[in-house]
Length: 280
Image (cartoon, rainbow, N blue to C red; front, top):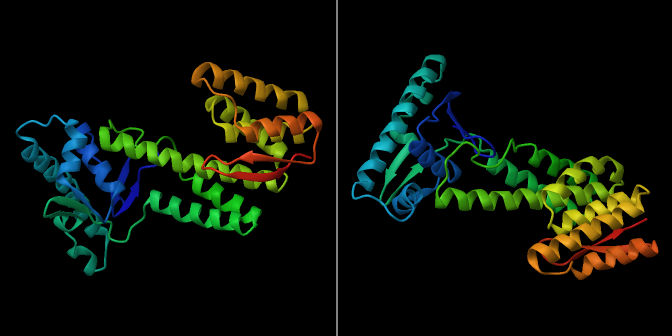
């Protein structure tokens, strides 16, 4: 089974789509797909579908959605069987793919692909390369990880409480990988190549101090000192107006360093702590 959730939902069994068009079954499949090979409790699925106000028939209705998914899976297995000459592969049934267990359901991927797992694998390797000081490798790995995203997670699924929470969590992991990839690119002197991307990101994430600081640094290194200082002023105005706070101490040090054209500064890491980067 091949699973994609980093963008539109796509789940395929032997190359055949098992993604339903109806909204509620899509929600069920999306949550099961995200947690493939793990048991998803019935209570979590009911909360996702009915947001804390389930009808009396909730469990029966959920079972109906599961049967609809199994019907799609059975059809996909039959189509795949006709093309598959391996005898063992034909033994997998719809109930083997979507298993009913005590208190929940489990979607068995059968060793297939998952874009979330691949993202986590590549991003983890990228972070380790950053820690080791291998910035070209880190930039490459993190770029490969980010390329798996085609849009917001579950972009075409009408999410409930569970999926909205998971989508937010996944977005945070994407932003973390993006921040580290830009940091790696800055470390290897790609400041001019980053300007177009950072212009868009700074406009989209107006209060994200790490991205704004990276934009300031890229501008300054590209000989656009005045524009770098303008970014700080816009950020400060936005933070004060919308959140009632001043920029972090690290961003203020970056501003002073650019003003003084100092040799070094620190840019705050979003997750906490600070990173040393060269201004010049």
